[in-house]
Length: 185
Image 1 (cartoon, rainbow, N blue to C red):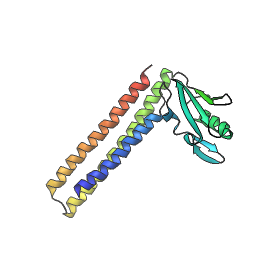
Image 2: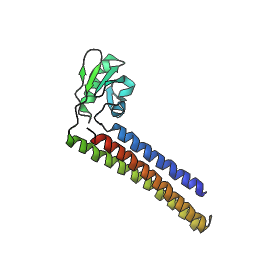
Image 3: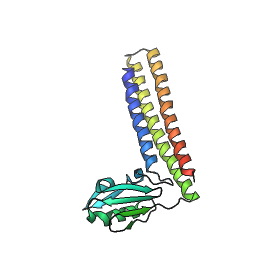
Image 4: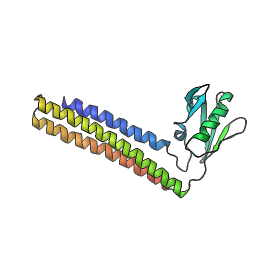
């Protein structure tokens, strides 16, 4: 019973870490990567469609992304979505590809991205702590109902605390790596 509660909390914590990893991937660094474009939705015949479903992305240089639409009719929508995104890019259409040259990040913009990364990390930590709280409440219910002894509940609480610490530390490590990546010139 206690193991199931801890396992359920651990699954929620894993999702929180995955969320943080995904959000950090969406934050732009000085180099181009396809994860930056995952959250971009294009208005394609009236439906919001993810960019990856409409085009292939390639990165020929460190700060250049080539987008090759599967349907040339989607080109204008892709360009509009890119311009309206928070990436701060100005795409150009050369007739065959959409070329996105990523501008060099200014120091101010880098610090802004670091603040954004810290906010995303805190959201993930809050989610981990929420999973811990739910687990603790379930353990206390077991103790209150007399289904499990106090010693077993205490051991479960200690194990839940150690699992929580491990996941929070993982989020902190991801944040440190992203922060280092962002501040690197």
